[in-house]
Image 1 (tube, helix red, strand yellow):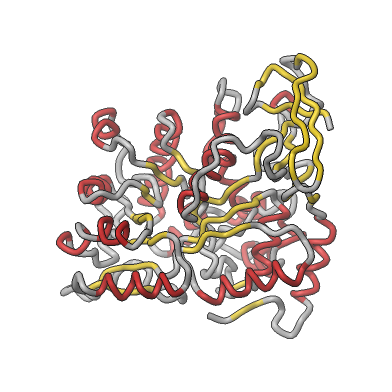
Image 2: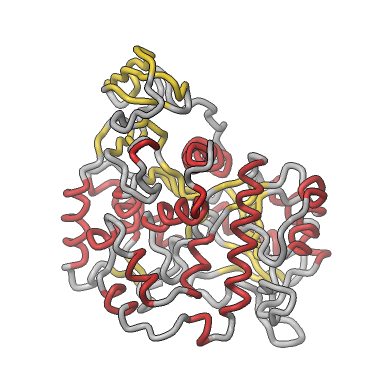
Length: 436
């Protein structure tokens, strides 16, 4: 096949051959015109850097079968998924689908069980307790040994820690209790001794700075309450942040926003259509109903600004927080790219930087959290042929457009077969749902 490969040389065209699941050859054959709007670009498969496979994205709080979630990802060209709210049911169902479907299948890295704070004097519980998937609560340092042992049994390769009061702006009300500093300070060291990476869930600059001082370097969200200064970025040397705009935005969206976004290609084919019926009846944003419209609107502005600042510094990971209500598996990642690009998609280098971050960079992150040695070059002779073919920039299409084709270890993903399989699961007595 003749393709462009911007990762290797944006000014060249390549002939690529695939045999037995691997790139048999990748060779430059011609110069590429700057205004080429026809030749597809070959990029590594997308990686979702922050998913919640055990949380119900559907508006009726129903949880899709993990097999459906896996196929939703494949439909949208997502080949690797970081699950930051692990649960055994999800892992078992996901692997059952891999064994039974006969399709190419995405890979997943699970955190096992997340860890959060206990109830505080004001009656607040730690973040995560409000969700149906179980978390471990840390009241004293010795509790961490229980968490690490439970995660080892589940085969977890990283630990997710909740450390936030839930504030989004300085005037926001506290919603959660927060892990005491004398416990949090030991988590990175003890997790590392157990062979686990740590990811921490923070909202505010102060939370991030405190967690950073204890040794945390991977932050599951960008800072929400302020735009980070140049001095802040200097203090946060080596820190990385996951974008997650898609998980927060449904709170402030109008009915028309939902209907427009859910008209993206692939939504009707892969998602529960009850979601469309639900959002068509929304009369006001959830943010107005729950009196957080202003704070969450401001938070999203700060999150995007801080994400783009991280992108410029090579410190961004692109993830969606999908599993939050209204942020759907597979579909949300493409929407995240559009949210990050905003009206600036034509800015020189932005499109390529976002695609590189959502593919090669995020794949390295996946490998890191999986306990593997990250592969620095994903497109070369002899390597597994897992990639998407994407319309070139000159075609003027949004980043949320479906890939022209997706291959997983040399096997083409059949979207028609995925749609049929999802419909088959939704036609069963469980309607393709599971109970946690």
